[in-house]
Structure formats: C-alpha cells, structure tokens
Image (cartoon, helix red, strand yellow):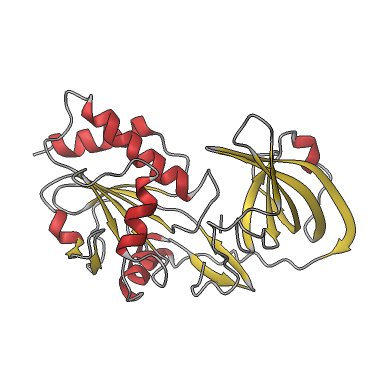
Length: 290
C-alpha cells in the first residue's frame, strides 16, 4: 500500500459504515468500491494495485494492492481501466469479488520513484537519532533503548486494511506472546511502533488504538509519535519508508527493522510478509550475541 498528511480526504473511521453490509452471522463487511487500475503486483496474478475512491466511513482515497478471491477476476485488466468491485473485509483478511470494467479511462497516479540508494541504511548502520513521545506523552529517543534487542515498525492508526497496519500491530502482539514462551528469549527487549501520522496520532490516540490489538501498560512495547514531522522524515529517508499524498491519493509502504543491543541495524524487512517466528529468532539471536 503505497500518505502526506494532513489527510484532507480522511474520514472518521469510527463512523457508521453506511457503504457496507454485514454478512449474517459473521464479522465480514462488504464495500462497493470504484477505482482505477494502476498495475499488477509482479509475480502474483491475484494481486492488483488500484487507486480507489474514498470508501465512506471506512477509508480515504488510497492506492493499495487488492487481492482477488479468484485471480481470473484480474486477468484481463489493464492500467488505466476504471473498475468497480465488492471489497470484503474480515478481521485479518480482505479480498475482491465482482470486478466490472466500466469502459472509462482513468489516470495512472502511482508514484514509483525510487529512494536514493546511497542514503538507505543497511545492516551495521545506525538509525538517525530523534526525540519522540511515548504512549504516556514522555519524551524518548531511540538511543534510550540501547542495551537490549529492539524491533520497530511504522503505522498510522487510521489505516483499516487488515493486511497492513493492523497486521503490524497483531504481529507485534504475537511476538510478545511467543517470546513469553521462549526459553532463550532475551531478558529485556523492546518493540517500538512508530506512527508517521504526526497530525493525528497523539499518545492517547495511539494507546487507545493499540489496546484493541492486545497492548497493555507494562508490556515491552512502546508506541511512539511526534508532533514534529522531522524525526519521522529522517527515519523515512534512511529506511526507504514512503508516505504521503501523491497525485491526490494517499500512498505508503511498510518497513520493519531489528536493532542489535548496540543500536546497529540487524535486519530490515521491506513489506508486511515477515513471520512471527522470524522476528522471534532475530530478537533471540540479537540478545545472545556478546
């Protein structure tokens, strides 16, 4: 899913979902969506990147990959085609059915500009320092967490798509649960969830949102935000994180990193597909090194 704030198109995601309908006996919601095909996801015929219009009560206009329940739904689509479809959402998954080509043509708005490779961090490097606010409004720096393994990822609380920001939250909760049962778990470690929505995600908002994913006070999990966009911008430039309003539509990608106790980068995951067991193994290994 590829956001510059302010999100002028954003709506309150807690509002009534009047564009959806619930399937009887389940938590599934179905939204009727219209958008412009941008490009297929390389190597996956079931995935298509679409610039969709605002979904009232659920999501602002955004460019993101959609998964077809049946890959054949996307087989004949070409960039620039305007399509309508049903978007199904459950707690941890979403998919598309009923794709219809309207016959209209739309804009290609996907920004595929590459980050400057010379500026990107790599294993052994350090992230740029910055001051943030934790979930209780206390100022903290990344260097405050040196001396222990650290994993950090980026989100914004107004992202409703199950496979993206909510997945990052669920994955961190699962990592904590797995480490609690891991005999070789480091004695101390920290997970950091950093919001790049500096205009909306205040400490209290992040804390309340995270509670729905299992966050509780006292966990080795910190929720960081900043009213000043510069610390996030420095991290984004260093890691290849992209967020902002581009060509009138919201776009963002994902980054998750593991840091060694000395603060150097151990590993960087560039999408949402990392596994809980991978993260546990990285944190265990980082904690066991001299």
